[in-house]
Length: 191
Image 1: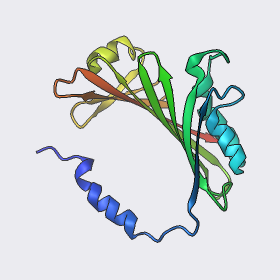
Image 2: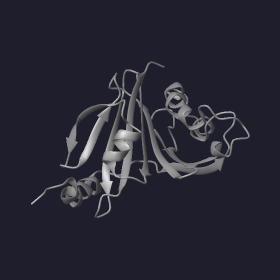
Image 3: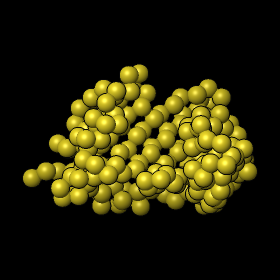
């Protein structure tokens, strides 16, 4: 029998529910539009007062508008962001971004925070579906990436040459005819 992390979810949820609640509820907001001047998550963070790690947020958010012109319909994106209502610059900022493409949408989660020493960390995780099997997607789209192994017997793990970005290719559907692609990139930035 194959064991997955899904079986431990009820325990993880129980542990989280047992933790003491935060003193202040998170603030949140949603926006969508072209985000021409800067990506919407950056705009929302500035408006919320999240400044200490804004450079790290800019670095991971730039992929949203990279290479696009103001009249490009693919520049439009939507973001749902969360931050600490009372201390936005002392806690993490999280934004979930949806972007349309001609063959479907991507969903990215951006998380930015700092440690006690003031160093900033940022992570962007992006998921989308390829309409082909993962073995074909690997050959057609990700051929230049290095193999880093397999998770759960069927999820391919690929890395960029500098290992700065990881890609996970997970078969979808009973026949594996589609491929869920998830990329993860972590950055460490001095403010």
